[in-house]
Length: 266
Length: 364
Image (cartoon, rainbow over all chains, first blue to last red; front, side, top):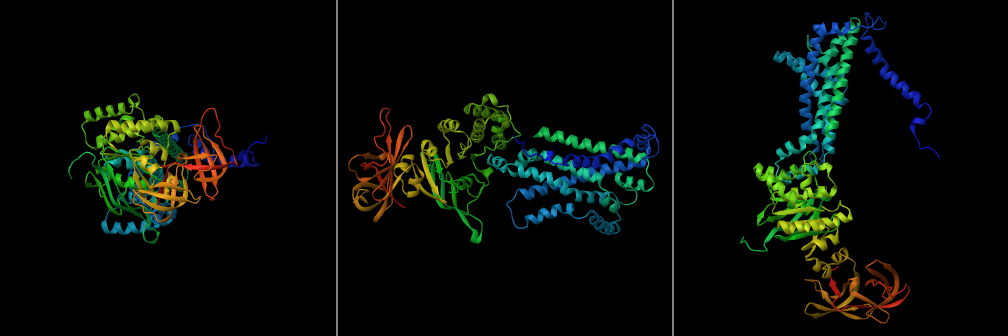
């Protein structure tokens, strides 16, 4: 009997797949390994040590940048998720009308416009406002991060809404629930996994951003990624590896956490 | 309005529903008027796209009419949103809330009406008992079977004691046996609760067996309203006769006899007595319908003559398809007995006698 077609049995499949995985993960493995290097090199092994984690922990600049990253990330993710939820409701709970497609495009625009363009545009825009108002706090960074996080939060929320049976909301209205109570009792609880996914995604995207942050930040407003970039220009020590490793673990933890939350919900 | 027995629960007056604008306008409902009496099991019957679900949605409030009024006990509810209408719906997909238990689903309407907790609990208990679901009150709706979900959907819609219950093809997702069971169950619930039911279906058998009255719809219009007996035996239009059960259509020359009766001269030359659809005044040639079970096959001469074309055995009866000498087709349904065959064979020359009260003249 002829076995059914499987891509696995195509010549070269295993080699290509293996190469892809090696190219993807080997550098990360090397980075993590050298975070535990006792020597001050990122390429020569000098024995096992946790001293770079210790030095990062005691580096006030690192702590400072990390806290700032979290502050910006958390605020921007929450604001972006609220905006994205409202946008998703407005674009799915309506009959199709001319201009709806344009609205989808407008909401998703930050995914398509090169970050460098947004960065430069915001730099010019915010610098005028800075001169005009004299305010130079974290507000600009939070506003910028919120803006480019919205489409990332929007996508999972909209996907969830589109898969939700509209009849459920109709049934609630039929059973004397006002539109607000229908939203509170039916739509929101069922949408919750989508909102959480959007929130996590927005947070991770914000935490990770370099380009726009680099353009928008004022002096002394380094986030963890821009701080690391600045350090690398002055020469790399395994401290960067240690910070990256912690960063990696954090991302994995967030994604895993979300995975379990969403699985439990369904 | 004076309160009197047999008053109308719902009055639909000149309701139109038009979708789209300009050239692409489609009338889903074309000036429909119908009255539905209190405590009635009323069925809207028709093929898909006939406007029956649209009419139900307008009564529920999920959509608003382009013109006309919908009166609920004399009050125009057409402009009200669904949550302000004392009318509940059983959805085709049941639409149970997946994040709530069976009991929470049933209590939802009462909760939204702001009823006290103790009252909700008592009423939910009553409803669970009514639909025989007491044992599963704490279950999630995803953990119960399709038939059980159907019962919960019914209980949920009945719990707030609506003035009218709307049912949108609620049995279509169930298998044959369960559907038969639920048909009886629905009749029982309607009897016990005394609530007016408006039932939408495309299944003519379901409509005939369950309804007090039926409205047959096609292309956005109500063609005929009547008891199942009226609809089956005195169809007003060709579409109604064709949609409900099996029918033979014959062309005949009509001469009026008076008293609501006419003499119909068939193509074979034989003349039979026929009743006339209400409000119809046939002139010259018209269509006559005869149900297959109201005609008899004979070996000799009858009102019609032809050749047996096909014989189909159905267990309880046999359908004999005859090609008439006039070129028309005619089916006779004959009750089976255990010991004998139907007595005819393919190719036999046969006569057909039409019963005295078997023919109805109707609009094309």
